[in-house]
Length: 311
Image 1 (tube, rainbow, N blue to C red):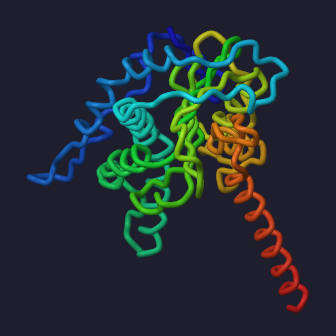
Image 2: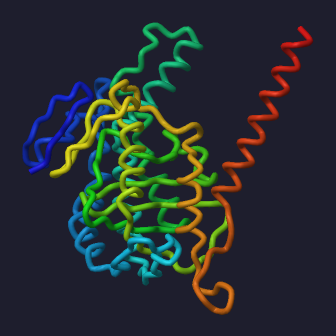
């Protein structure tokens, strides 16, 4: 059984199959021979999901993690091409079908319709679906060929899920060449990280990490901000945060947070050939980008203030 909690605090408990369905969300109905559906593109990912989770449960991770530095808890894993393909399909399908992705499409499409003077400006369901149609294939091609995977395990504290979760995949097929990240809870005890920095070691392609309670709490807190109306949990009801109760699929600025960037560097830059032949981290990629952006924003702010003073 799974519980769903809304941002007004209402809780409903039911089997997992009772939640998460958007009726006809992947149908494009505009009349006549142009009517179509892209629901079948998710069939393979859906058919593989149970086997993907069963495989993830066989992966080894450190035990007794308390007081261990994060880098010492990371373990390299063997990842076959088939397993990589299945993992890419699972994560890509969840991101492409996320209500947050649909909300982003709706917001962007409505904005441009307003700019062009189209009445009504509000994007309707067929138009949203038409923009959503190619996302799974684009996401899958990116995640299957590039990036680093990390599987996160939690013992005492459970991961929550929602109608939005932390990722920065664009709601279009453009811009996928830039650094990307996604943190996708698959079960109450397993979450999958996809990290695609500007550079990273080619091996290992997959690492595992058992989290401490405060790390799980961070990811759950972040997910609440990215969700809008619904959160899902198994047995540990989350304390609702203002970022969730205010609604609106909020997010970190530029999807970046200093603790998160350091975490992503730890898992994406891990390699087996560090100083003295011991495993280590190559350097900073996400964190450097975060700090470069902060400096750039500070420069822009300073320039705006100077222009304001002159005017």
